[in-house]
Image 1: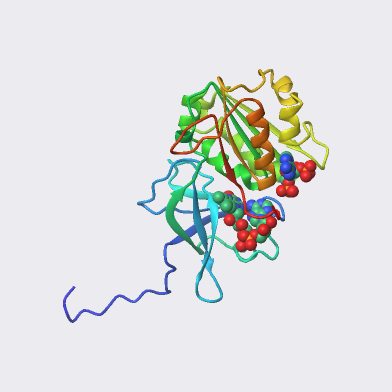
Image 2: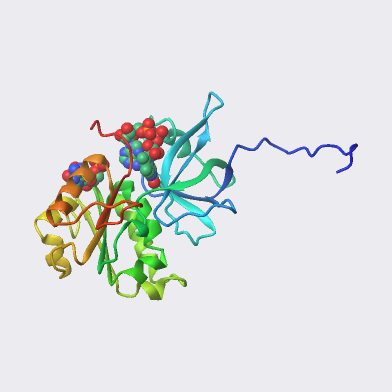
Length: 272
Ligand code: FAD
Ligand code: A2P
């Protein structure tokens, strides 16, 4: 640029770390998913989370942790979100439309990653509510099916409608040109409700402890030699599942110390 050239004038000021919304889908009055452009330099491992948000009224970014629900190979990023009526971020975020911008800090982290587990035969993905989000990423990740003979996706919500995002995602896998063949018949999907009639009911914890899920799927009881698990739900859920997995003889691992299961909170709260 020569010394006399006019500076470029942009039509509207851009947010820091701005990404553009490319689609939005509302699943219930409490749940929605959306996709945004992906920063060209962003690398992440399927299952990790990032900080996303909007500019707050004070002019400071209002950021929250969000699991990336899309796999590492996807050109865009997908998120699956709660709508908290008075939530500082989601009371606004729920109104985003295609073409809007959100803030996305490109620093992915998290423990729900393949590297944090020792090799095994079966991978159990155990979730409630929006805790499904990191597994929406891992269910579309080729490594998930390359590393395990069987993948069992347990997802529990109060009502049937709250299972819809997970249901649609699982149904889309067989037609996916990239991983459809890899998934084959390896994936066993076990959705349940607790407060509305459904073909399978009950908390993840109860179905593990009673052995019902093993009987229903014709699988042996979980054991530390063959089974690996990833857990994502409320703190209370995570604490209860952890105790059950430890009762089966599995030990909690981490990125730096891979073992038989890993845990991450789906949100902070619960009063615990
Ligand atoms: P906040 O002030 O953050 O929360 C208000 C209250 O709402 C909380 O105290 C809690 O009781 C409840 N709450 C918050 N989030 C949830 C939720 N997801 N499900 C049920 N109740 C909730 N949220 C998502 O929707 N999708 C994600 O993929 C996701 N990933 C996360 C990953 C991590 C590691 C963590 C720690 C949190 C994650 N969250 C996720 C929660 C998210 O960070 C925010 O809390 C949520 O977006 C609500 O923001 P808010 O500002 O509207 O309300
Ligand atoms: P329940 O209906 O029996 O409480 P929430 O909407 O409260 O976040 O719960 C989402 C789902 O997780 C519900 O089906 C709920 O079952 C279940 N759940 C809540 N807490 C636990 C827990 N500590 N262990 C297992 N499941 C739980």
